[in-house]
Length: 178
Image (cartoon, rainbow, N blue to C red; front, side, top):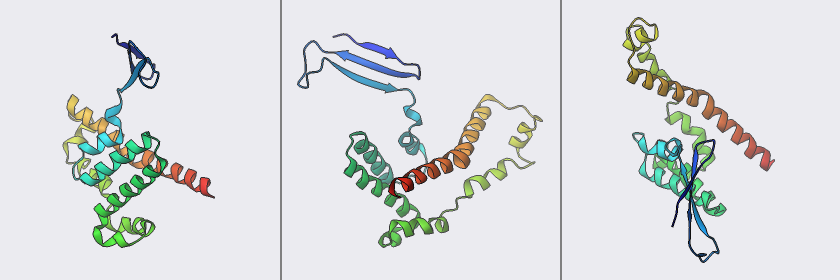
């Protein structure tokens, strides 16, 4: 058996393992895709964050799996389960009897959506070391610059990418059903 590895421009690595005889499906090779960006996949990011409910991670992973298997009905069921798990985490069990639309309407009353941004004000206060580093009054080390770049990426994602993705997807869904 020999292994053939192909690199594609966007950094996907395809590994082809040729077989000496045809398998039951009449195929001569197995193909595996090694995704160099897998750590950026939302499920991998979720698992590294604090306070993420385990049932949410399980439901989301299942939704991904059934989606990738092209099981449309199962994807719908698991997607609903993911939404329910998110809402249960923030609203508690009492809201379970309400329709998802009503739960989503009251979600902002139970989640401080501004808190992640407002918490940054302490870091950027004039008496804080980070402020002095940003003003080039003191030296910044590489670890701090890496953290700063993570912060910038998160800010852009939180303020622009996520709201934009939600709006675009919402518009596509609305257009599909209108």
